[in-house]
View (cartoon, rainbow, N blue to C red):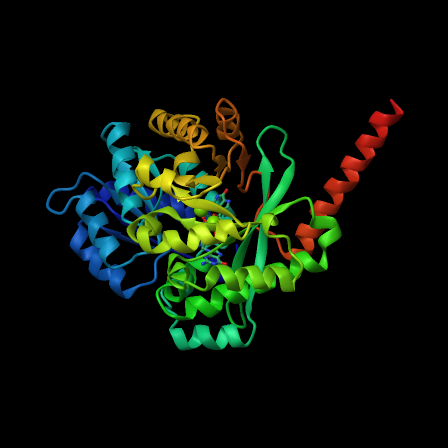
Length: 407
Ligand code: C2E
Ligand code: MG
Ligand code: MG
């Protein structure tokens, strides 16, 4: 780890001994800037002024407890990773973690006290292994719409591809296009930093057309290699306000010679359900043009079975918050089982998003889950690397077919 990897860490615990212990454990092995607080209000005023990467938060504190601190952290849009500490039973930590995730906070783990050096090591290393680790120097910097417009005009937005595989034999059957901002100063930025701003502005219309054009151009250029795959492209719900969208997308497909049945458009569940009647017109006509539709981040909204059956979806992507640790979490198992059964009844393919751990993959194998995406199989890849991975799979398939034919 070098200087730019200095971690800004704070801990909030009414027990001063825990703060001292954490400080010691962290500074023994890592380059950290550590501040400890024995109460929530002091920590919150510090957080408003100082960029922070990681927060250790005790749930049980007199005065403002940990749950209340989480609410305030959400109000001030804290993007730091949060570790919950508690001496209480595991269920409380689990429920607090769920609540925090519902508030869009990035709670990564709950730890029972006392904390061990091993737990700290595992935690810091997993934090650094995460792709696009959100450095505090950047998270505190909000981009504005003008900067985004300029970036789009300067062609700084580009697409990565994350392979989608069959769960039965991990064969790549397609990929999802994911946008990245090639920022001249900060390097490659994930959508986390800018997509909300775009999706809440009128820029989203031109932006999505640009994404679709770049995706179609890529498919056209490498059609021979890619023709048996399908490609997912994210749309914003706001795009569905444009009644001409189906015609525009079909025209683009024809201009770039991309068969519409190679394309799956994804829309996020939670936003879609809020604007259903208006969106349904456009969704139905996209299907009529031959495109497929996928419901993204399923489980984060509250769609009823009736609503789901009214929308012509072909695929359901189960949000990664239900996948991570599903092997050991019985609540998640119940949700996965019910979703798989629902999808089967509605004739939808199921994609498990964000598979990171082998044990979760093994568990998912018990259910009718068709496809998976996740770091366990592949990170989002630059176009060239994606092409290489498809080429090697194609070569491997050809060789094994020839070997089979030769007997
Ligand atoms: P999404 O559509 O649900 O995409 C999946 C996200 O999960 C991607 O984040 C992907 O990198 C990440 N991911 C994949 N596997 C794993 C895993 O194993 N573990 C973890 N922790 N994460 C994993 P990314 O690329 O940062 O994109 C975030 C969101 O931004 C996307 O979520 C999508 O809603 C939005 N987005 C991305 N590209 C576009 C775009 O072209 N247009 C629009 N409108 N939205 C986009
Ligand atoms: Mg998606
Ligand atoms: Mg998703």
